[in-house]
Every structure is written in C-alpha cells, then in structure tokens.
Amino acid sequence: METRLLALVISLLSVLSLQAQSDGRYIEVTGTSEIEIVPDKIHYLIEIREYFEEEFEGKSKPEEYRTKVPLSEIEQGLRDALTQAGIPQNAIRTQEIGDYWRQQGQDFLISKKFDITLTDFNQINKIIKHIDTKGIHTMRIGELENKDMLAYHQKGKIEALKAAQKKATYLVEALGEKLGDVIRIVEEGNGNIFPFAQSNVLSSDAASFDNFRTIKKTIPCWCVLKS
Image 1 (cartoon, rainbow, N blue to C red):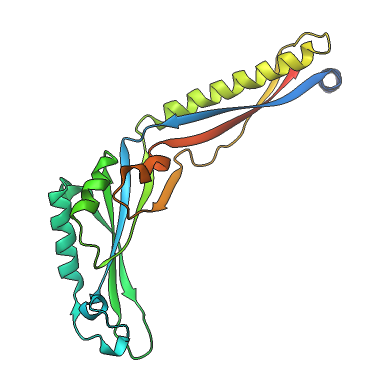
Image 2 (cartoon, rainbow, N blue to C red; image 1 turned 90 degrees about the horizontal axis):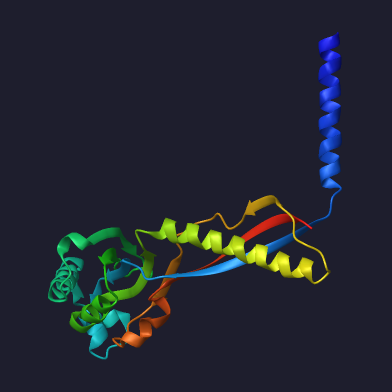
C-alpha cells in the first residue's frame, strides 16, 4: 500500500512539473538553409525506338512506310557513338525494354531505355556530337548524385538550426528579453535527400545544362526555445 502511494505521489509531482514547464513562455521558430552540391555521378537517360526510313524521306502517310530500322541496329549505332564520346560500355545499363503500340493494323515498334552513368556534364555534349538522332526518342538528365551527400545534408541541418536560433534571438531581444534554453528541436524535410533534376535536352550548347549542373535543396529545421 505504501509503495503504491509513493508511486502515486511521484507520478503527481511529475505531472505538475510538466505542467509548470509547459506554462512557461517560449518561442517557436523555423530556420532554413540552402545547399548546393556539384554532382560526381550523373545519370543520363536515353530511349531508342524503331523507326521507318521513309519517315525521314518526306513521306507523311504511315501506309507508305515500308523499311523498318530494327532496334538492334539503332542500339549498335548508339553504343558506337558512346564509345566515340569516351563512354565505357560498363557505364551503360539497360533500364527498360518494351513495345510501342501505334495504331490498329500497324506494326509495333520496339523501344529500349538506357541509363548511362557519367562523371562530367561535358560528356553529354560529346554524346550529342556523335549520336545519330534518328531512332533516338528521348534524351534527358536523370538523377544527380554525390558520394558525400549525407555529409552535406547534415551540414545543412546544422546551418538551418543556427538560422532558427538567430531568428529567435533578434525577435526576443526586440521585446527587451533574453533567449533561454532550447526546449525542443523538430527535424523537418526528412524525405529523399537525393533530389532529381530532369530535363529533355537535345541541344549541344553547354549552357543548356546550367540549370542542372548542381544539386540544390532548401533544408528546414523547427525548434522551440524558452523566452
């Protein structure tokens, strides 16, 4: 009985202590930081698709199409162009292969997607310079990566927390008060820290890739401090 009574008293004191703390004055602020990282791995995505030679001879009616260029021939041309651009074969990975349905009564056209791992954006310009765009359905920049991404992300969180504290300080001091201890920190934005940057790009101009040369992300952090 005495043990149960003692536990009840301790529990009651704990509740009162929590209430006293929650009744104190505090300020909630959100800080943000921006990180910009140069990627060391670039995924360049290329999709090839069968086509008819008549499409490039000025004939616009599908019924006039007779000479289909097979996927194997298009793929070999792509791989030769990548070799000329200095891309090793082990950097080329097949991502997907499938049929492209056209219209009732017309042949299916086979397509194939490749994920090409690059280390420099200038390699894209070299690829475009050597590639035959006939048979190329799309070319675009996929995921950008950096091996130190997690370290950059952690640094961004720290900077966001400092920004929140700085904001709280000048807000409280504007009222003639002093900032107290940190009560709680809430980490926001815990989603994918490896953002994607994508674009449909066929230009050989290096300036076309300026918006995709770096990984950019805004990192927030929310905290509660005594005032």
